[in-house]
Image 1 (tube, rainbow, N blue to C red):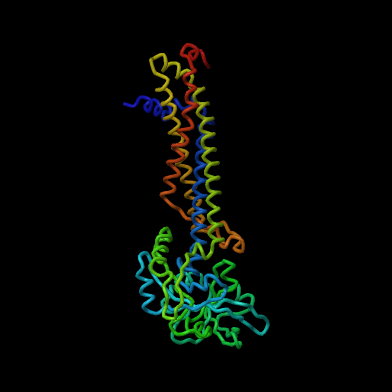
Image 2: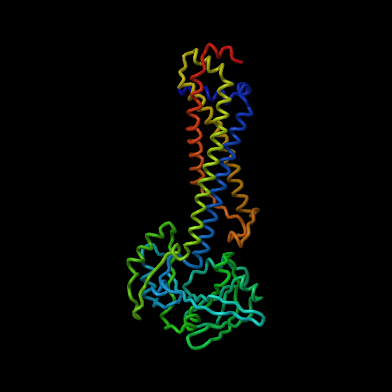
Length: 415
């Protein structure tokens, strides 16, 4: 039988005996652990939710990997590359790639009777994954995008809609400046989206791949490039390496050179900013663990001092210092356990409350989201619980040596 555990259970679980223990010390220690764990759970959930939400928005417009003309990566001009059916099959068969889709870009100006605005028109084909756009849709319905003909549909952002006072069903002229002339096209507004990311909402409009290809004067098998979607973001680098080995530096039948880049390379500022959030997380975790450890050390010292007579009796009966230290460490484990229980209830409860109600709102212009995103990760919650328990017990080892300074004879007279 584990004697220290038996004694710890007795002094913690017996109601009559617990009256002798300083209740404020136990409550403060329990509260410190609970608050620390709850803050850590909320912090990790917010950072995970925020990073994944922003990442999904960037990937929604830029995919995971972009295959394009090498000249497009080295200059500001958009150069065509041949992405025919056979090339799409090659890209889609690369290990790790889940889906390949074509796109074509061109620059233009949307003009109404009262105002005008520069835009980037992105043409997409029938194979394009519309799930992200569907989630961001605020008005209207997405058209059936085509690569062989067009009725000039256009999907605009809410920002552009507000600036130009356009609604679903309106028709708007767009002007495109070529090398020798200005071409005008009349588009029909089919839908309005909103990502709350300024770099997308301020400029990007979507239409048929056929329309942008014709406006650029490209051949039917040419486009700006292909966007590759992968099933696991954590495998982005290995999949990107596969694309580099199989596609990069090869030539299409117009002698254009293929190249590729990942979403991390296309938007380095966004992902560098997101990576800085990890530093804040570690700082908060360190502070909360320090809070839990400090309150537990204070509580343990008070409990040891109040149990001076019991320690003296145990020593008189032959108990060693190590046995008594383990007894109080087990007692501390019970306090930490109760704190962890309430911390989980509070932390997980706050996360679920925000997920289902969205009580905490944010400025979308600053944070790219209008509600604080939270993502609950059970493995991380378990890891936080285990780490808090182990660290809290570890920092109590040194204070527990106070029992070795208590002498049986003197403790008998201690009150």
